[in-house]
Figure 1 (tube, rainbow, N blue to C red):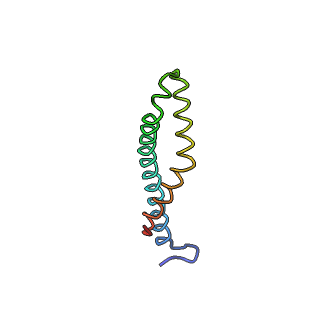
Figure 2: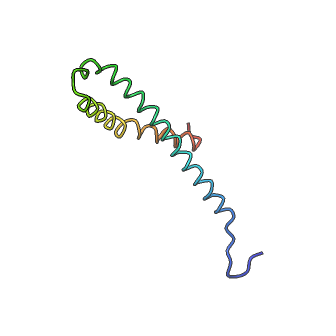
Figure 3: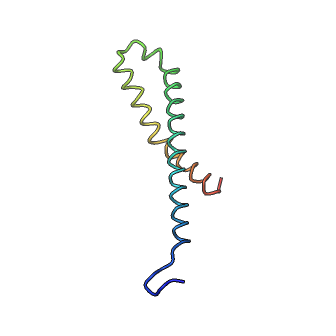
Length: 93
């Protein structure tokens, strides 16, 4: 029993802890998936553009690959991965 000045919050605290764990899990899954997809995108870009980029200096090749990687990851891959992870963890998959 609680005194008049105290409030009981075990259920909300458990809910908060569950939410924190879920948020952490979403971040972990998203980070690992993004890393694997980034690797796959780099391999695909090098497979497709490797010959064309081969004659360019290393700095220019790195600039081209990293620029394409950032555009693809920020605008296509990460939003998709975030939605998929959220659906999977919420049980709506």
